[in-house]
Length: 408
Image (cartoon, rainbow, N blue to C red; front, side):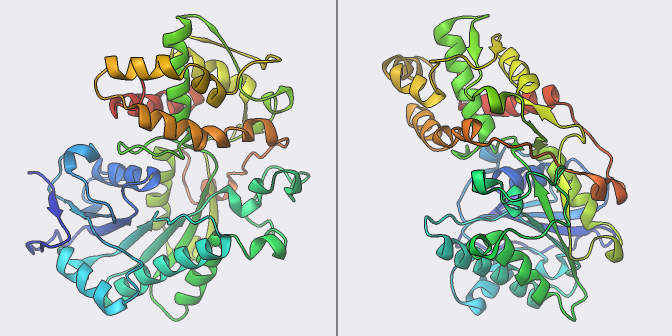
C-alpha cells in the first residue's frame, strides 16, 4: 500500500492504529536529518512493531516518489504545515485535520529549521516553531511521551573559529559550559533547549538534545548546505574534466589536513535519536548527547583519499596554488553547463547554488585550525554502540547524491 499524502486542503482518513506500536511524527522531514529519521523508522528500527504509525510533516509539498522512502502503509506524508502561522488554534486545527490518529502521537522528532541572516530573528523564528509544534501536540495527543531535538556542534562554539573556547578541552563533552554570553544570545540552539526545559515542567513527557558534528548524508530533494552534496558535485566534475586517477589536492591547508574530527552519518544520527527516545526517562530526560559515526576521530589526511577514491581519483595533500572547489567550478563553468545539458537530470543551477552556498563555506576547511572530536561516552552509557567507518559513511552519502540526480 502506498503512503497517504495529505495536501494543504485535504483531510486524512482515520483508521485505528496498532495499539501495541508508537506513533512517531517528524517535523522537518524534507531535511537531511528528518529524511533519515523517516527512513530508519520505516526500516523497523529498532524492531518490527515498535512504531505502528509514522507521520512525516513538512512545509514544502513533495510526492512519495520524490522522497524515495520505502513504501509502507504506516507512513503518512503531511505537507503545507507552517509552524510560523502565528495562531495556535489554527495550527491545532490544521494538524488535527491532516494527521490521522493525531491523538496517538507519542514521539516527536524535531528537525525543522528556518534560516535568517539576522541572528536575533533566527533565534525568534526557531524558538517559536518549536514552541508551536510541542504545545499544539500537547493539546492534541494525551499520549505524547518524548520530544527529540537535533542541534549540533554550534553548541560548542565551533563556528566562532579563532574564538572557539574549548581548544584545550578535547574531546568535546556534553557537560562543557555554554559559549560566552555575548555569543550565546545569538545561538538559536540554546533558545530551543531553554524552551524545552521550560515547557516540560510538570509534564509527563520527556525530551533530550542530540548533537551531531558534520552531517554526512543527503535528502533526495537536495540541500545546498550539505557537505556530501557539495563534495560529490565537485569530485564528480573533477573526475569528468581531469580524467580517472587524477590527483585532486585537499581544498584546505597543511594545518587543517591533520586536524581531527568525528563525522556523523545521517543514519547513525537517526538511529540514535530513535534509540534515545525509547530509553527510560531517568536515563535521558533533559540531557544532551553527542553522536558520531565512530569514537575514533579522523583527520582529513585519512578522510580525503577515501572520498576521492569513490570517484576513481587520488586524494592528495594540499598543494600551493591549487584552486578552491568554488574557484574550480567557476573557471570551468562553460564546460559544466555543457555537461549538464548532455546529461539528463543534472541541473546547472543546482550545481551553482551548491558550490556557492556550502561551496563558499568550504572555506572552513582552511579556517578551522583546531581539533574538535566528540566524546561518545554518554551515548555508549545508554546502550548505543553502533559505529560506521569513514568509507561506508561517505560512500553511502555519495550514492544518495547520485541517486538524487544531483551530481554527474
